[in-house]
Image (cartoon, rainbow, N blue to C red; front, side):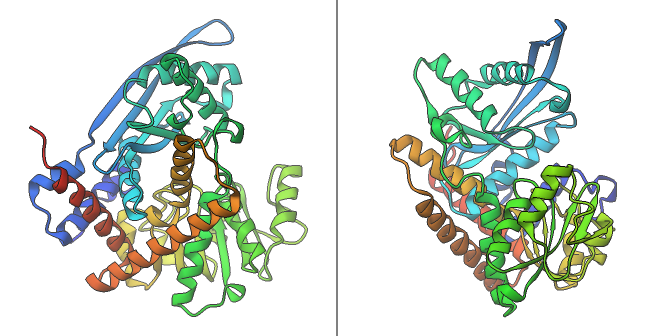
Length: 421
């Protein structure tokens, strides 16, 4: 039974712990194996002294957590934000372990973060932070150890700096040390669209379970950035009606379906989705609770909580963001019959194409975008069906099934390898 820890409902590490314990209980894992699977393999905290543009010296704090390397090198992004915490990085690293296991990639989970505010820093200051951070964690990263990627407030430029810094230290160009790089430095075609495209693939599979034709589906998307914006664009191209887009400053709504390309141009021109000529302005809360077939939160963590879960009015919840639903909201959604596509499955398209990039870099042979998208669809559809079948076999909801399947696969690898002593 889930204990009510309302005071730390929004603590990501606590949410990860609750879901881990629930899955481990259902799998009847012994206490020793639980400790192995639960405990991060390595946590590194580093000081990052940097000379700022005005000549002042500032010392930033950086983290890199490797949660598991049982199934392969650690894999996970690096985020820059003023509110990054070690608990957050731990939680995200564990989620990466389970995410990679759910889609059956030969990776473990890792995550990194630097406490800084990129919005008030120049590009050269960000480069200095990135290169010093890379040099501080260089002993624990590498193509066979730990492969970083972009995350919040980092991008392909950041990855180029990391790759270059690592390569200079190693005295050889090592493109496979990071993924999410520029195409001309060993990046993969299809990577920018991958997370949103993965959301499209699993949403279409979920719609089949409700016998809803894609062209009849009504979708609300929270977030209009790389994940939400790309999912909206790809869904619209397939005739799926995106009836609302939600951003921080409000939402825009059209029950006949928004013209996503026109909305993107409007946002680029005005800086906001609001006051779009072909839509109606709503508050973010109004749009979040709209009657729809699919709600796709693709913006931030903890959007769906004990407070908001009872008001959600969708058949399918496709979690495009990491951790958009708190653990305490899970039972509310389950009792209300919401079909949840959990984040460790729904947004795994990004890490899947990152895996493709890593494979291509190591081969020195690159695929065309059609092949990338085809292989992404194969993995996402197969993984969706694996989770659905696991849920039916064990008579649990999809989130429980995804976590149980992931733990099962990682535990199996640990048992096969044994405990080194």
